[in-house]
Image 1: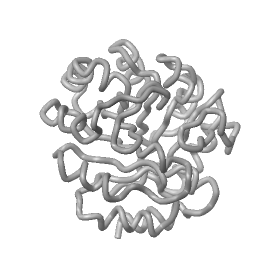
Image 2 (image 1 turned 45 degrees about the horizontal axis):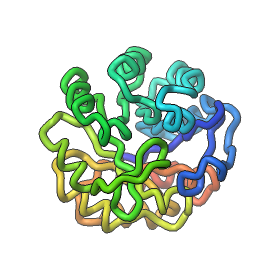
Image 3 (image 1 turned 120 degrees about the vertical axis):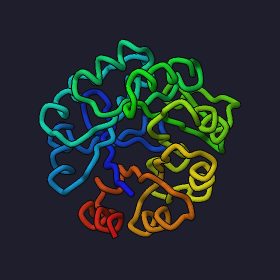
Image 4 (image 1 turned 60 degrees about the horizontal axis):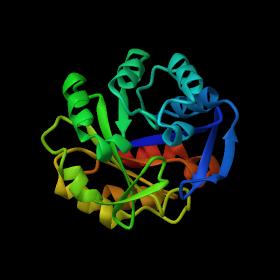
Length: 240
């Protein structure tokens, strides 16, 4: 399994939200590129980036911060937030991003996901963010009646490289991930699933590793910034 340290970007800074609420943001680093290098120097294999402003705006907002990270480190990075057309996808991949994450458009324009996955093999992931099993879009601001597992299954044969499943109620709350639902999703599809939301301890990582499903990895943010999880130790857990 892979541990993906998260760098959530708001107004050019690295922050963490509580359950997706933009008004409940804690700034952890004014320099996202420096934060990225801290994670890279600790040994991480990937970086998980989110343009929070972009998710609401529907277009990239924190591009300068993302570009500074891509220039400073050669570690593969995936980015979500505000990526909703082919031109934006192409632009980010041309700038050196290893993988784009398509969330809102996976619900509103699934044909774009399929087109992009075909055009850029291995470089398109789907972000599925849900409350109580139902997908939320546009920076989690809009609720839908779309079932998260059914949405994942709808992309089964389209070449999607990964599903990033986030339990919004757990995100930033330091209450542990939704292991049962994440495992159910991973067992329902052959697409690699990455767990996100609530990972707050080494025990949480161990629970995901032994959940009975072939998870690709897990994303952790606040716990790394708060020191609840030591990144070096966590990386060893996933390698064990």
